Amino acid sequence: MHCHLLIPSLFPPTAITPANDPLHHVKAPALQTLLARGACSRTAASDMESWLCEVFTVARQQDYPIAPFSALADAIDTKYGYWLRADPIHLAVERDQLILTESSTFSLSQTESDNLIKTLNQHFSDDGLHFHATHPLRWYLHLEQPPAITTQSLYQAAGHNIHTHLPRGPDELRWRSLINEVQMLLFEHPVNVARENRGEAPVNSVWPWGGGTLPAALNSPFDQIWANDALASGLAIAANIPHQPLPPHAEAWLAQAHPGGHLLVLDSLRPAACYGTPHAWRDGLAHLERQWFAPLAQALRNGEIGLTLHAPTPSGTLGYSLTRGSLWKLWRRPRPLISYRPGEHEA
Image (cartoon, rainbow, N blue to C red):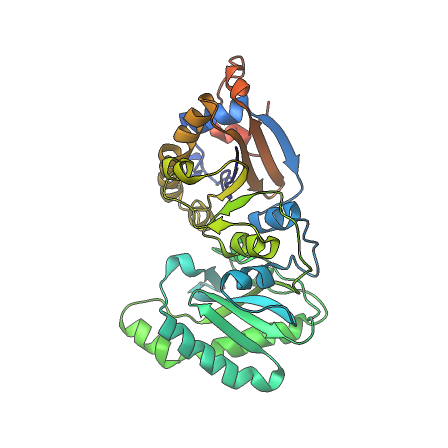
C-alpha cells in the first residue's frame, strides 16, 4: 500500500523578518526525518490545483479546468458549456487597496448563499450568465461560450491586493466591469446588511477562476482519494474511483485503507500561509506532525506502507519518496525545515 500526501503550503513564502517567517526555527522531527531520507524530485506544477490536474493528465485550457471538476463534487451537471468558479469573497479596504479574503475567514449559510445567488441571476440572466451554488461557500458561473480571459487561483489572490490578480486577456475589461457590477449589487444587499449588523464580514464580491469545459473520461494514477477538497473529489468522480473525506488522523486512515495507491490531501496549512500568520501556520504544522507525519513514519518503519510527500511551491512541486529501507539512510541527517524551501540552501 502506498500513501501519497499532497501538502500545499508546506514551505510557505519567506517573510521580511525571521520572526515573521513560519519556517524560522520550527521543529517537526518526524517530517524532518522523512524529508531527509526521501528521494527528492521536482515537477513543474506550482500549486495544488495544477498538480492535481497534471497527475490526472488534465490539459490546461485557458485555465486548468478546476470549476467543472469541483462542481461534480457539488452534484452539479457540468457536461455542457463553460464553467468558472465564482466563489463568494470579502474584500477589505486597506488604504488604497482591496484585499481579498476567502471563505476560510467567514461562514455563510445556504439560505444566505441562495438569496445572494438569486439576486445575481436576476441581474445577469440576460447576459447569459448563470450562477449555481449547491454548497454555500463554492459558487459556479455557467456560460455558453468560453470567455477570452485567463484567471488566477483564489489561493494565489487570497491575502493580497486584487488589482494584480484580476482576469487578463482580450475580454478583461468586460470581466472587470462584471466584477464591479457584482460588488454594487451586493453592497447593500439585505443579506449583507444583516451580516454587518451581527458583526460579520459582508460577502461583497465574487472571484472568477479555474474556468474550463469538462474533458472526456480520464484515468487515475491512484486507487482511492481521501480529501475535503472539491477538485480532488471531482477528479475521483470523473475517474470513477472511490473517494472519501479526509479522516481526522493517520490511525483512522490506516484502519480503513485497502491495498493500492492512495492520495491524501492535507490542505489545512493553506489559510495561514495565504494571510501570513506564522503562529497559526506553526500550530497547523504541529497538528500535522502529531496526527499524520509521526504515525505514518511509524507505519513506514513497520513496513505497512510506502510513502511519498508532494509539496507544491511557486517554483515547482517537490516530491519525497520513501520505502522502509529509506529510513536506514542514517547518514542523511534531518535538516531545518527552512533549508528545503526553494531559494534557501539546499543540499
